[in-house]
Image (cartoon, rainbow, N blue to C red; front, side, top):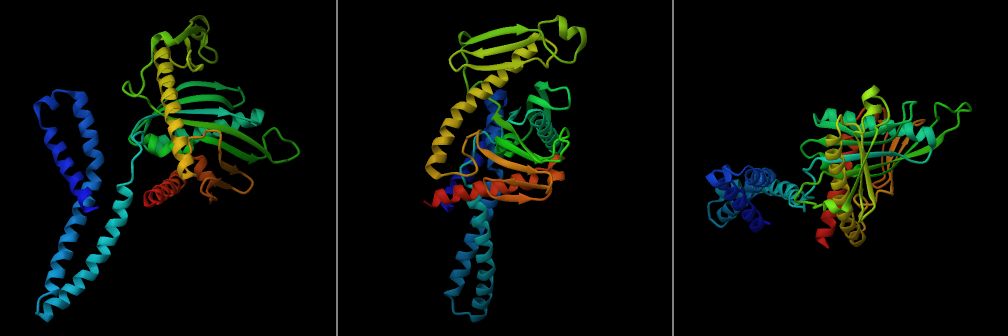
Length: 355
């Protein structure tokens, strides 16, 4: 571990020097890339430097134990006891910090919500999920934008696409992909029976140009009149865009922007994210099959969570986590769930590294 840490510390200092060079300062893209990598190493370097210092102090104390001065030996033994505890704590922290990091974790994201089985109740539940993620983004001071939405007219949502921008956004919300189920008495139910409905969440890392290359010849682009609220402008202007990616058959629509040009850019952004996610999901599924991952399988059809309203209970089935803070979660407080999912994934990674 010490050798690996020294290598990382040297790399960190080399990046620090690079950021002062004129050829880097005059190249914004290069400077951004180096600064991002530099920032990602800061915590490892800080903890690693402390760990190496502890190792040096342990070596010095062991050398004192070889001397004849009994008083110094007693002091050295006391110090060693404390140093060994510090060393152990730092090693545990470093094991997590040195785990392979998902390169997408720091990216912005595209979040897609779709009502599933359950009719109007499923659409109302999709609306609840929509509010959860909007509130969570607000709690994190992230920026978000509604790229496309289709409502039912009674407060429900058939489908919504949201762009969320913020530091570490994808790394926090990537665990939300999958089927979410709700168990409750629908507003339209007169007999008081509990119904089960579902909605699907897809969390996609925002694709950069270097991540995915789209051939314009592979795209079929149609324009049409936007539907929904918006008055005469919506009804008379063909500002909505439908893009079909011919090789894969993927279709993306966008109508929430004010112009055709903006809707086209937004639709392309979603398409790139979906194509990148499709590539990465294939790899994720292969890896999950190898290490039987419970947390990150890449399978968006998996039932991951149940929201039980009569009992005020929320259960994440991947890690058998149950909480009775349903109201807090509905107000966007996902911290407890996400932290438990992160811990579970870290434990999986650590176990696979041991093997």
